[in-house]
Every structure is written in C-alpha cells, then in structure tokens.
Amino acid sequence: MGNRRYIPPEQKQLVITMSMSMKPREIAEVTKMGRSTVSRILALWRDTGEVERKPPDLGRPRALTSVEEMYLESLIERRPDTYLSELQDSLLDACGISVDQRTISRTLKRRGFTRKVVRSPS
Image (cartoon, rainbow, N blue to C red; front, top):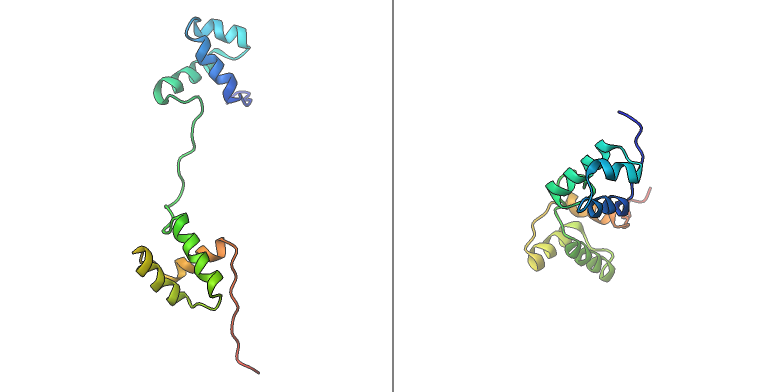
C-alpha cells in the first residue's frame, strides 16, 4: 500500500467534471494525483454514481424504530415506575411490536434512562 492521503469529495467531483473533456492522464497531471487514483475515482463514479465509498451497514438492524423508542420514552416520562412487562404490553397494543423485555431495557439504557433496584430493608 503506497502513500495515501485524504481527497475531499469536492475534489473528486472536480475529477468527474474534468473527465468530460480530459483524459485521465491529463487530469492526473493537472491535479497532481496519481493516475491510478484518478482511474479509481472514475471507476467508482461509473459503478455507483458516487465519488466516495459508503461503509457497509454493520450489525443487525434495531428491533425498534426511533418512533417506537420515542413512544417508550413518553410512557416512561408519564409513569416513571412502569414495569418492563407493562412497557412490553403497551408496545404490542399500540404499535403491534412484540419484543423481549431485555430489548426494551437495552433501548431505554441506550437512550439515557437508568433504573432503580429495589432492595429489601436490612
């Protein structure tokens, strides 16, 4: 792997524009880019219509959408002492979504909610 440097999307877009009237060799000379870099930008443009690669989506999609997460938040804000089982039932009734209580717990934790642990008096 040779020396790599970041090339802003605007500069890559300029390469595409220049390719309408110039050859890749000429573009490389004018822009001070390597010929292989110019060719790679043009190939990506031809294949995807984009000048930058988009990273692949990693991981599994979330079980709850942002709308359903906001619904859970509103339930908690209305009644902070709601049990996970009640939230689970409310999601099923209102949104038709059946998810595990652990999913609800992780979702609320990710959105900044914490829970209190009830301990018996010593």
